[in-house]
Length: 360
Image (cartoon, rainbow, N blue to C red; front, top):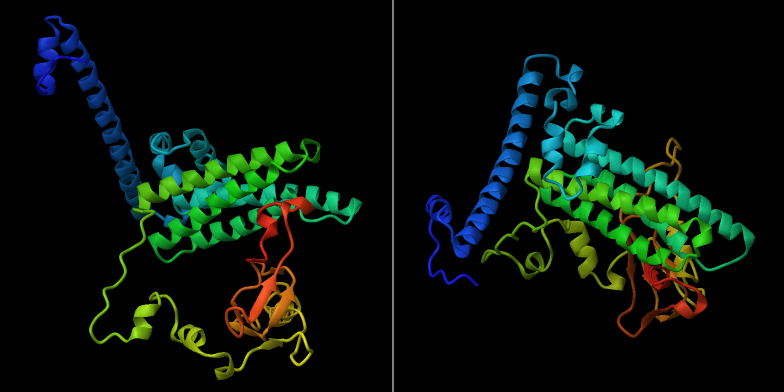
């Protein structure tokens, strides 16, 4: 260690270092490193500011519909990407031909990630279908990836349409997490099943999503920290303080109601006294209209909250609620009365993701 007892400023340090001495040379190197780091950060910030200024000026001076952000930014794409965790992935996303139609670099990065998610999803689905056609087997890691990539594609779209910075960050973070889960599931897939091809695409997709997160933070002030919750006032009721602000009054009433205090859309009972005997059948029935193909006369019908009352009993089944089966609420008769039991495990060939008794 240097026997220095104080830290001189950078100018004094450099001057003293010229006269020799290991301690001062080491301090000089540290100071230069700090200065270079600060200069780099300053250059990136200036480049981002210049990009925003040039884009605004050029659009203001002409027809906004005829000017893409790439035309206005010039070489600043390189400067922006240098501040992201994956500069190469960033440059690829922002230099693609499709990015010219995006409204800004963040939108371009998300749209590029969505295209890559769709491509990886097709490959995973094809490999999964090929495997399933040969035998009746439990879901594999490839099935997990196909489902997770489908979910991620939807989450990226939600991030693009998010109404707040925090919502966009949350959707992007969720999509990024899915890639790690997919990679874990692929460890159980034989290499001969196209595993490495999917793994490479998933790894690249994780970089593109990470790039979108970084660009969101740089250009839109995004943050992974949730906004502070509102401080309850003296007039707030216990009910209002128990739920987040985004929970609607209708959903609050549903969550606070007893089973006998509402009219469910379906009733599940083992003895046949309800509309269905199995929970999965009830979920499929109440969400059928909302899952109608786009363009159908039934598309969008039944998209409101659907309540399924599950009477007391031991239901031995695996319940899956897909991304398209939205706004489903399950209500039972209480802890220890309405019980759902699953039997999936690694011993039977199931991955951790597919072994959940109730999965969404």
